[in-house]
Image: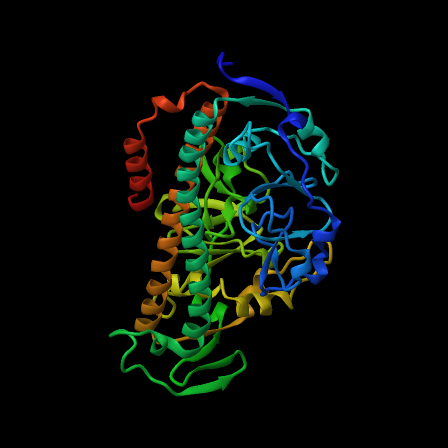
Length: 414
């Protein structure tokens, strides 16, 4: 520890405040809109809203909210209403601590999980290191700068996700006419009612299996010394809809479920708990590899069905809702490959399939880029948080212009 940094017990860092039960609102009373934000112990920064002004906390700001069950910290510098059970409002002594520095100091602690038990007791056992106030403010500035950059990427991910969801609903029922600009101009406007809902008049509605080719099985144990990439059900990220991790295995070590051959542009759909949307399009680096029998492997007939169009359509709420009705088993819900292939899908002309698929793919790329930037910035934040809060790195050693340039580059490049 650095000599000029003082040690304080946690309880000696706080002052009393008047936030209590009179400021709390039950979860059932929280609304999606309203005058005042509700801050609770959940992962979402704002739980919802209320119009109950008499419960408003508007004095003594800022507060640090600690989730007694969730171990979640929030820095709140605006008037708010407190969520119910487990939400603790902490007030650092401003004569000793810059509030934002104190918040970041708490973030740096590793508080082990005790399940849904209370964790405030563990927090109270912590020792707080107190640098001089000017140094605290500089540390808080550095960490706030990185945190804001992370929040910008979070916002971009959310808005892109919401935009894509809205566009998918329109593109798969109205076609490219819903797009502005040259691609959508001149597209047909008439629709027809079908068993899956309205679609443009020129579109067909077909069983998925009728526009897919037969896929192959493989037994890696017949090739004991050959190395395979194995895509398990847990390998697919159901937010980015792609394979993010996999295992490399020798054929002799292959599990019994590693039996389905996958090739470039195949689309895999997890038939175990299918509503979780574990869907991915197979990329070239996974060509001729193996996936679990927990996936339905779909190989589009390239003369009839575009792979990107299919991949995007499987993500729609409409497709998942129809799959959900076919589930069997309460504790381990699943569908068969034949169920997936029996579901009917809309089928535009091939050129329009390409347009729709590529348009949605562009949004996926934007979201993926933002996710990569967020991951890089988060790693930087964790490193700085640890080094600055332990004194391994002094804030005066940081060149602020260089740091800002680095953050800006992370936020705009890649």
